[in-house]
Image 1 (cartoon, rainbow, N blue to C red):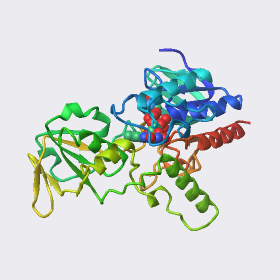
Image 2: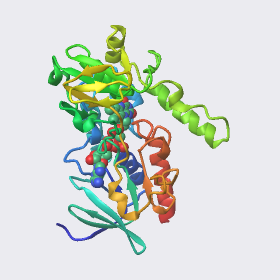
Image 3: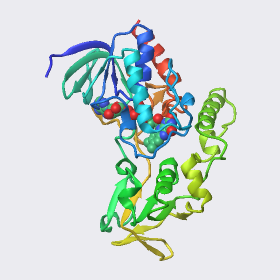
Length: 353
Ligand code: FAD
């Protein structure tokens, strides 16, 4: 345990969002620290499944200031490549990351914010929260979940198809994670892929770049009072990265509609049809990891925290970065977090001057 420390800005989280904010704070000459719960650089990219590939080429997956180098032999880089890029990024820009340090709570303390961690206390004028979503997997409420006798896991626990070879596996979820994991399992497992609505693949010749453009165009249209362009959702849900495309083209990615309950041996649809399963993988998304902000009591009636840009309306010394379109268009992507990080840093500098 160290004694209390002071700095102008505390960034909570040292994944891509925290690093992008740090890059801009450094350029503006501010005094700050990045507190990260991981023992090594890379944020969530250190924990994904083995076959995961980015949905954009390296050059279109870059943080401010430094292009991600291409990965030899791969158009779409894998997660270790991203983690290595983040390690290099924080070293290159000498970002002051302290790890492993877990922030337990952010508190109001007179004119300052007090950041309690598992290795001491920081006093600061501004907090930028950049903790991502990976740490808060979401599971939908489905009848009978406790009855199922097999294994249930979320995307965050899935690693490789060999762990399920020869098994009957149900993958639930029609987004990129669900499609990629289903494609992984389509060859050596007895796969049932379940999606809430028929899967919507993006056209084969477009990738994550188009998602970024669509999110940006939508934000611009809304800001200028024009008609909603529909954003990312208007294009589709699933980027047809090569393994997904291949499994789909072989006819291995046929989706069934959502079942209505779990049974002891598997699942049952509303019409009484049943499927037996050894395992169910829930690729059903994430929620923002914001428990460290609970002491500030920011949630409104519907459980949302109101923001203007990235600044929290009810606590203007706090900024939320990288959690999704609600904290900046495409801000939960490598290329998309750059702009909100820059705007946040500028706003922070203004507020401190
Ligand atoms: P994270 O990477 O989660 O980093 C947050 C950091 O904060 C972590 O190190 C965590 O340990 C730390 N932390 C959390 N809580 C605390 C605390 N209380 N105290 C201290 N530290 C804390 N984006 C793309 O651009 N291209 C893609 O192809 C792509 N594919 C994706 C595939 C999947 C399956 C998922 C889930 C996301 C994908 N994304 C992709 C989206 C996005 O880029 C990642 O989710 C990214 O990890 C978000 O970065 P982040 O820095 O906001 O959060």
